[in-house]
Length: 79
Image 1 (cartoon, rainbow, N blue to C red):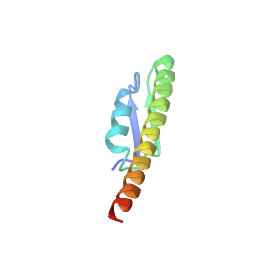
Image 2 (image 1 turned 60 degrees about the vertical axis):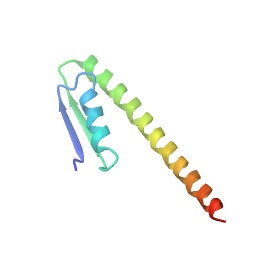
Image 3 (image 1 turned 30 degrees about the vertical axis):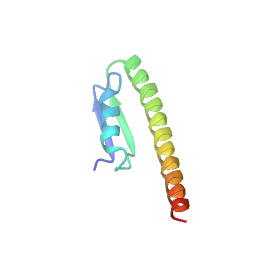
Image 4 (image 1 turned 30 degrees about the horizontal axis):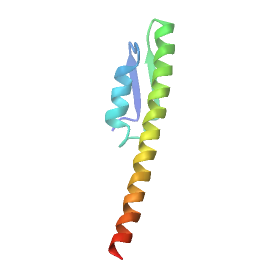
C-alpha cells in the first residue's frame, strides 16, 4: 500500500482524492505532494483535499459509532 502520493499536474485534486478513497482506509498516507504550474490550481486542490479528508474522517467516525451502537444493541438482545 502506498504511504505517499505524488500528483503531477494536480489540477483540482480529484486524482489524489480518488487515491485517498481507494487506499486511505487501509494505508496510512503520510503526505500528498501536488505539482501544478498554476498556483491557483494548487491552492484549490489543497482546499478541496482538506475538505475531502475532513469529510472522510467524519464519515469514518460516524461508521465507528454506528458499529458500537449495533454491538451494544446485540448484547442487549442476547440477554
